[in-house]
Image 1 (cartoon, rainbow, N blue to C red):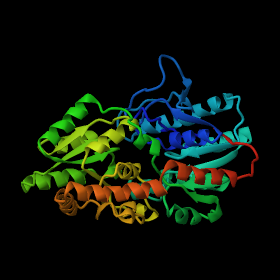
Image 2: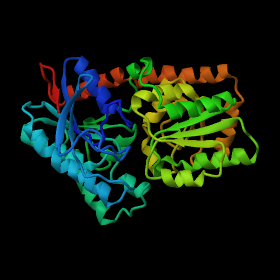
Image 3: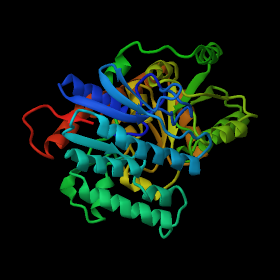
Image 4: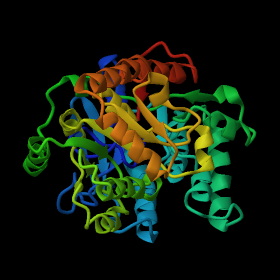
Amino acid sequence: MLNHYATPPDTPGSTRHFDFARELTKRGHQVTIFASSFSHRTRKEERLEGKQNYRRENINGVEFVWIRTSPYYGGNDWRRVLNMLSYSFRVIPFGLRLKEKPDVILASSPHPFAGLVGWFLAKLKKARFILEIRDLWPQTFVEIGGYSSKSSVVRLLRALEKFLYHRAKKIIVLLPKASEYITGLGIPGNKIVYIPNGVSPELFSDTGAQLPQELDELISSFKSSGKILVGYTGAHGIANALDTIIEVAKLLEERGADKAHFLLVGDGPEKERLVGKAEELSNISFHKSIPKNAMPELLKAIDIAAACVRKSDLYKYGLSFNKLFDYMASARPIIWGANSINNPVAEANCGIIVPPEDAEEMAKAIMELCNLSDRERQEMGMRGYEYVMKYHSVPVLADSLLEAIENTKPSAHPAKLC
């Protein structure tokens, strides 16, 4: 598996590929994940020391190959592009160096260059190539990034995506309607498989890691003063529309509605600006990212979970937010501000949906949940828990992944994935 941003549970970020690899390993398959040692979340070198350029590490039975990539510390500028390219170029020699011959190379596209390298390695290794599309590049650039569809960058990425779509044996998509976009480019629909994000039941059933002391003390101070804690966890980026939550906090404070306190946990290019915007408010707090295995403890401590996105036509293809499924697995009622074609919160009836970037409606929804009893909020949250375990648990999704792999070419022996 090639995923630049793949992470195990001891660091912040999505554990999608670790969870899949762990489940497949339990079933007798051999899986290796190639990931960057420089953390996209913390902007730090997390896994290599000194002059190390790569290192193999077994984490709970899952093999990782950590690859040194160029660091970047700011927003989405040329340094981040260099970080993407350095991963893509450096994964090639380390992929070739492995003695194992993979049956399948699955390349995930937080950026499309990983897909190109996956195809190239699959050709050299004579392996089957599966492409996973997490974001619809370059359509995301057009709909959210503000790029013209006629720009040279968009045209180049459009040519690259078509090249990869045509050469992949299977295309895994995380968005329920992404197939409409891809088939519109002339790709046969039978190549496309929908496998959304999900949750590991193990993560939410185990005790897991404890919260950092300062965060635990912060939460305790809110609880002791009788506050209802409204939590957001995850990236602080443009697409996350966190200005809406800050505007909600401001509205409630101006109106003297002091039941709720907002806690935003995570990092991202927008965080510094958001903290500055909220510095005059007394009902909102921020904390840095925490490891994924500490997330269940955090979500158990909050009363209401919140998430939102910007208004965008891109979401006509759907959304698959990790944080929504984490919220559900923690049995917390959810405020969800989005205009996506799919809506797991509505399907599970486990929260309130409001229009995107509408602070007034979100404020009303938060007060509605605050005015419910603890029991009513718990019942709402449990509906989300039952839904996510039925449709989005890793063992269920791993069945779909294995079926997709097997449909590329029948095999009598367990597959080895790299």
